[in-house]
Structures are given as C-alpha cells and as structure tokens.
Image (cartoon, rainbow, N blue to C red; front, side, top):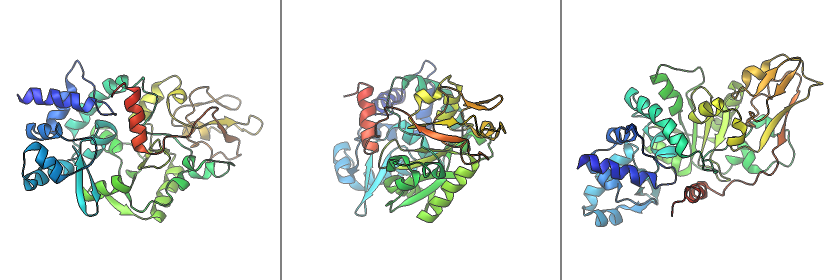
Length: 350
C-alpha cells in the first residue's frame, strides 16, 4: 500500500505544470519516500493546485480543522506543499517539484537528497526538452542594460524590482547542494531573491531573511561584479530572481554542455564584439559562463553559445563588447501563473 501511494503521488506531481516523470531506475520514488510520509502523500493527493482555506481542505479529507491545520503546516514547513497568507490566514496547496519543492528543501538538504536529485536531473531534463516556455529567463546585468535605449522594463532588472513590498534573500540551494556533493564553488551563497508570497514563504519557514530595496541593489551590484547570471521568473511581474553560476545551477550546467545553449535559453539579447576595438586581453573569455567567446587575434562570439547575460561587458577595458537585440523576441508572460499555464498547455495537459 505504501509503495502504491508514492506511485500515485508521482503521477499526481507529473500532472502539474513542472512535471515529475517516471524513470527506469525508480529514483523519483526514492525522492518521494524521503520527502513524504505515506500519510502526507495521501493528503497531498487531495489538495488542489491553488491556495485553499483550511476549512475547505479539512471538510474534503475528513479531518477536523485543527488536525488539518497541524498537518498542513508541518508539510509546508518541510517544503512539500506551498503556503500563502491572505489577511492573516494561511492557505495551502499542492506544488510542483521544480521550480518548487526542490527549492523549498533548502533547510532540509542533505547529502542523500543531493545525490538523488543529481541522479534524477537527466530524466527530468529529457522530459521537459520539448517544452518551449522556460520558468526562468536570462537578462543582462544592470549596468549593461542601462546603456541601451528603448529597453522594455521586463528586461531591466532594476525596473523589475520596483514596487515590490516584501523582499527576501536566501542561500542558493544549487551551491549548497554542490558543496554537499564535494564540489563547492567560490561564488557567494546568499544570492537568491524572492518577492511577495515566495519571499514570505521563505521567511516564515526560516529559510531566508527579509531585506529592503537598498540591500537588493547591493546584492545585484555584487552579482555583476562577481559575474553571476541574472535569471528572473520568465514573466513581466516576477516572483524571484536567481543569480546563477554555471558550475552549480543545473540549467547553466547542462546548457554549457550543449553546442548552442543560446538557442535553448530564453533571452532577448546576444553579445557582439567590435574587432576594431578589441585588444585580445582575454578578460571576456574568463568571465563568460557559457564558454561563448574564443580568442585568436581578437575575441569572437561563438555562434549560438551566447545567452545574452552581459557578464562579459562591464569588465572589458576598451568597451569593445555590446548587446544586440535578438530578432523576433516577444514579451514574456504576464506573471508566473501564466508561465505555468503555458507550460501545461505545451505538455498537453488539460
């Protein structure tokens, strides 16, 4: 019976936009057994993919409100379901594995889960390869975009954070995981930014701390200095910003292995180098997270590899690098909910 509940939970999670495909190895079942008790798995199957009042959930699952509240809050604290707050009331819902449950394991992450996740990633990546809409975009670092004219606000990281009234920062789970696996990197750990409900979830769960706009700007400046890739929600109204490195971030790690990562990552720009100005100093080669620049008599962008992050531009001593618009790029979805709905449609889910 307990084995069957995890198979049913896997199918349930796979029907959510982010997906949770089955594998030949069964590693996904091992992940679920580590995260959920059989009772928690059973309750998750009865949740909706939208926030609900405790009273509605309790009535549907045959619990008292007190029993449901205690169990739901424990599951939210463990990061296996999602909680939002409305007018001081907690509402709960089922949530997808990635982006979602995996990231919510920040305070519980250990070596065993890290190894299971790494074993599962190739299966997950293959299952989502045909999905056109990504959950994240890559946009240029702040100082670079400010040199361009007629830039849409959703491509300017400083415009994206304006008007956000609750902001949190937390440790990058990708760097924490790689550290546990024995592959630590030298980039700062506390770099993931959340806004609104996502930020409150992290703060309420003891995974992050609330910060103000001034600290957000300092973190973004630090990320630019260090050469991190700005990766916000693939939407005009963002819920989070990841500041990624290609040594730890799964999307960049696997992207770097591709022949043409620029074709598969959602970005509105590509770098270009003025050969008349370039002195072949090699600074841009060292900075590029995608190995998209080769150096001969001058530096040259390798076709299809640039992801438009702009990391190479601020440190060019002769200002030989600039951004060009990628033709035919449309505005991103309105919000994360629309992102997920597009992914769901592209996966053929009703």
